Length: 341
Image (cartoon, rainbow, N blue to C red):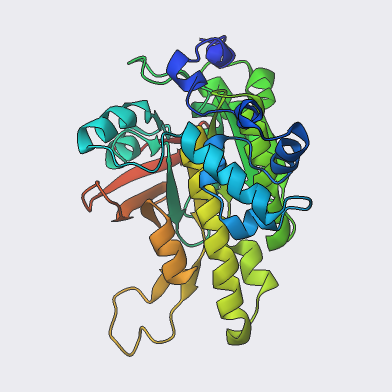
């Protein structure tokens, strides 16, 4: 099993390799190489990426005029087969490419319908000490392991840390639990530290470039935590609208990256005390931060709370396909595992 984490690169399926159309294809349709380079520097590396970017943002790229933007958009639409509709049956076939990354706990996997879904954003939120960062660390290892059914080949992970809570040594005992070579596991995790909300947004351009450089190799993007820096950089009600605007742009970019490169996106979120909750007699006065923007942008939301001892309780808070349910898991030396009865 030691070689499994490293075999991910050899196990890439053909359909994953051709999952996106490289932006270099534009050159054959009359777009010059210099303009393509400018697009890549802005984090747009695929033809679908052009469709996902507004004309206004393309015009903001230095050296690209409105006339060029129109030409690029026209060529991109032609390469993607126009803006036509597809049937639900065709969509169902496309969704066969969706994979799920195990969390390390069979109970939590079952709650999530098999694990952390690709082409989607999974958000977990809870108070401090509810296991958000521990799930993140466990996923760094489990994402590298192919599943027994053969539907997932394993791959590399990118970890964006905003709170300085990433500990590489924490991955070692988790790797031991799965009989994996420790250094090989650590070598497959790319780490970056974000210091401001602006920096956090800029990092996504480098993430897109990394996914483009090694197609099909990366399977998981972790952001721990998504709101910490937005909470610091924008203070008071006066800056709230501005903060939510920037947050909406960030979440939109995350969603587009997950769909563009077929990766799972896992984000953690903090909680806040709701001072108005006491007036409405709510059972739990705490709620996740980020407001409606974050609530609508996340595909699946999971609420974590403390249980007895090392056990934690996870509950589906919002999902387009999963029923509202809850399960218990435990935090162990080897990461997230099922709670012993």
